[in-house]
Length: 113
Image: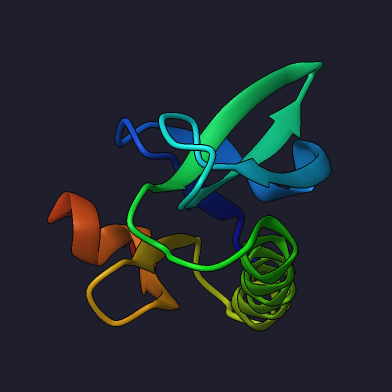
């Protein structure tokens, strides 16, 4: 099976199997709107989503963020089922997670042995 990577907000990649925690907080810039979601690897937080535009009360926004967390876990599980290495990314315009083979993102074809 291939590895699974998560794309961070700054276009970095973290290995999914090294994530120890997924956490959500209120938006980083606005207390009255938004949320952020980060993954923790080796004690360091990596922001995956920073959505300052989500309206609603803090409990409503954090509940939405929990649904996004659950969707991330499902996307990781699905990507683990692939034979190739995959990158899981959040698509803010579609409000969903997607997975793509690393070879598609890098433009490199996998080696045939």
